[in-house]
Length: 151
Figure (cartoon, rainbow, N blue to C red):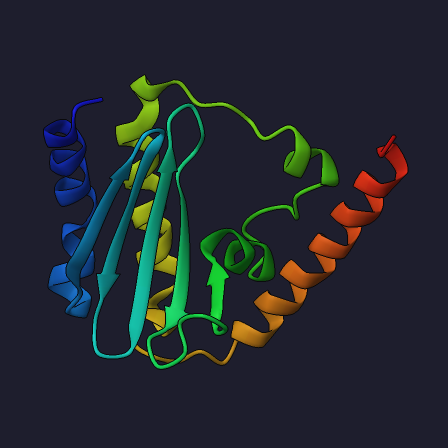
């Protein structure tokens, strides 16, 4: 996909993030296999990651501590009961996505972020430790799984 087309999709899909929550797009970093787009407001950083052939994913962070106070939108959805927790198979064999579905997926992610992540977008990071604990537990499980198959 051409950069201009991707920029159009991002602008269309994430306009509400800017208008409803005061976010500004601060950086777009294209690399050989995808792109990272960063949005920030006074309290929160939202990072959209997209790798060609993969589903896009979003992380949310406390802008005052973005390196350590960060979680994924997917873990938030698991915490809220909107999505099943991933299996270890999901980590090692992630589902693929045809680029033809990118616009729909970006809009879906934006809608989920606005609907379920409003507290984070407004600077309330109360659930963040729960999400980080889920992610840490999942990482431990994935490492155990990988360790069983290491040659």
